[in-house]
Length: 518
Image (cartoon, one colour):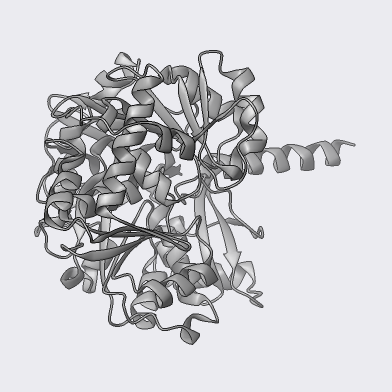
C-alpha cells in the first residue's frame, strides 16, 4: 500500500479530469501529477533523503494537496504543522522531528524569522503563497518550473508516511508516526462503507488540511479519484459561496463548524443542493446540534467518525441509517478496517454496558510516537491501541464515548462524565455550546462546573439551567457552578481546550481570593 497509488490510477484513467480547484485555479490530473513530480525533483535537489521530514505551515490550498503527494513521491515524510500554534509550539515540533525543510505561505510569513531562530536545524524555507517571495526563501513556483519531473520513489507499507503532532490538549504534543499502510487502510476501510465519497465525487476541504480528520477524507478521495475543492479556512459565507459555485458533493466538518453553518441566518439564501454527504468528527457533537443540522440539511446523509491521530484516524463510524434513537448518542460501530473493545484496568475485555477504556487494533494503528518509546509502550499494549477515552459498548456493537480518562469528574465519590452533562445542557434553547470540567471543592473533592456559550439574546439564570439539567440527569451530575464567556479556547482541530478552561478557572479563583484578602 502506498499513498501515491491513487494518483497513478487517476492519471491513467482520467488525466483530463479536474483534480483540484482553488479560488480561480483548476488543474487536471495530468497537470496535478506533473507539478507533484517536479516539486519532488526539487526536494531531491535540496538533498531531502528517504524518510526525511518536510513540514508545511499553510492555510488550505491546491499546493497543500500537491505537498501531500510530492513529499512521498520524493521518498520523504510529511509533517503538516498546526496553524493555530505559536512560533514556540511550532518550533518544538520542528526541532523534535528534525525537520530541515519548511513550506510556508503568505499568512504565516510574519513568524518565519522567529521560526528560523528557534529551529537551528531548519535549513530551507520555501515560500508557497501567491505573493512575492521574501529574501532568503525559495519560491515554490520557481522550483516547480525549474526542476524536471522525477520518478516516484514508491515508498510503501511500513515506510514512514508522516509525523503528525497531536493537538496539544495535554502538555507537549507527541509526534504520531503513521505509515503508508496506516493511511491507506483507514482510507479504504472508510470508503468501503459506500456511504463516504465515491469515484468522481467533489470534496470540499473546509476543515484545516493539516489535521487528520480532513486528511482522512483527502486520502479516501485520492484513492477513488475525484475533485478536491479548497477554501483557505473555514468562514461560513465563503463556504456557502463555494458550495453554490463549485457544487461539491461531500464535506468534512468538525462539530463547531456544523453548528455555525446550521444556525447561520443566511444559510437559506444559498443553493446548497449539491451536498450529498457530510462527515463529521474531530470532537463530540451534542444531540441538540445534531438534530438541528438534520432539520436544516434534510437531504444530506450524515456520518460521524470517531477516532484519533494514532489510528490514522478512523476507529468507528456512525452511518446515516444509524442516526436515530439511542444510537445518536454513540460514535457508531467499528469501521470495516478496525476492531474495537472496551478494556478494564487489568486489560480484560468488559461486557456490554460496562465503562472502561476504548481500545482499537488494526493495520491503521500507528507505528508509535516519534522519539518517545515510553509513551509508545503505554499506548500500544498487547496489540491494542489504548485511546485514553472512557466508554462502553452496547449489545449491538455501538460505541458510546463518555469522557476522556483525564476529564472524568469524581464528585462525592461518584463518577461524572462531562459528555453526559454537556448533552443535557445542549437541549436547552439558550445554550449554543458548553464544556463541563471538574474544579476543586472542599466538600466533594471536585464539583461539576459548566462553561456555557449562550445563544444570541439569551439570558437564562443559573437556577433555570440547573432545573433543566435535573430533567435529564441525576442531581449529583448537575453543574453547581457556571461561567458564561464570549468564546471558548479551541485547538486547531476544533476541540475545546478543557485544560485552558481549568487554568482560567484557577486564575480567576486565585484573583478573587487575593481581592478578598486585600
